Length: 358
Image 1: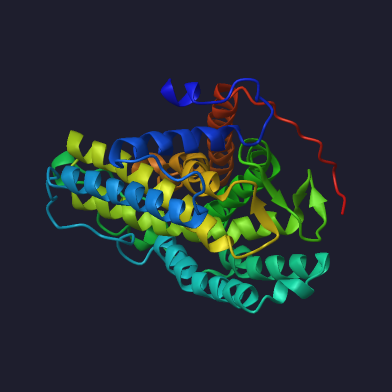
Image 2: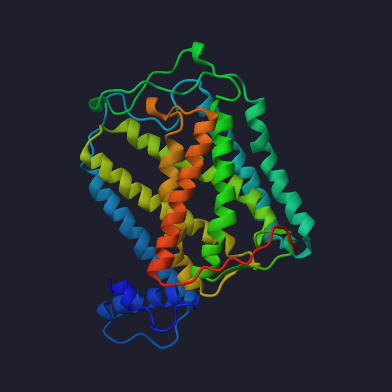
């Protein structure tokens, strides 16, 4: 409870509460490793660089140690689903499309095109970039479902390609289930979780926009293609481990550590790449990058493994309805975790949003 003890008394409603804790922890580390007290004024960029380098290197070191104890499975591992399946085709499409939306955003940020954007421009850009992902399930080729039978633990989780007789209908195909899962998750994240960023992390959006529950409406769409890319990439990494190594306690520990590191790094990289956009800001950048990445990482700690299991293993074969319920369940678990952090910090949650307003 030392972290909580570092919080200043009488500041339960201050958005800087978590920042004080982060700086107090960093100050303790500095006192141990530096012969003299740190200067009273420090550059935030230097602080962030040092702390994030230590955190990321620490994660890599721990993963490297545990990796030594993994036992390779027969047949080796794979990154994509075996054979020509609907899940494999969906992941390939998302990965191929990801450079498109990233490139559009890079041009907008680098060229500062956002300075001339109106509320309608933001909406047009984000909805347009979503369209290929929304349309894909209806245009995707009819392919067998990726629903491999379970294998013995000694063989890892490898499986043979399913037969062509298992081609599902549109409503039962993986692309539509994955799209529905991510759409529900993205909506929950914006509608509910954003207010925890406002309260705990002191985040704010100041660009012109139509808002739903005080969250810019274009973000509901932008989050969808962001999360589509994140979860396609996380599927590759989780599949490589589950298919390439025998199911042992060491593999279980490695997967847990990998999820922790992957969740934190994903949150950090998004915060880093969006930091050049001046209309999304934090009251304390140091807190946003270091502690805020852990707070944001709670999203992915739940969603990465939950999304991965869809049509991945025999027990992961879900209907469209079950996939929607699964997304809602994951969303509720994340909300519980975020609120647990808020309660631990003794901070109030205020939601003053309206249905739709500019």
